[in-house]
Length: 62
Image (cartoon, rainbow, N blue to C red):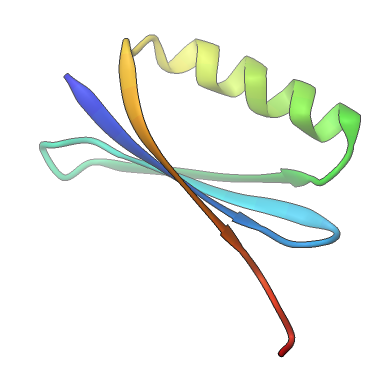
């Protein structure tokens, strides 16, 4: 099963959502720091899925 993984990147934090083909959604946010990236990696590993399409979106004030 392939998931869609969306990350909204801001200066201070990353807002994330995992979308399953059956409509389920899981969301999380972490700090945009090395520690936040470690939490993101651990969270993704716990999801135990094989593949994902990834979309990154940078938040802007412009």
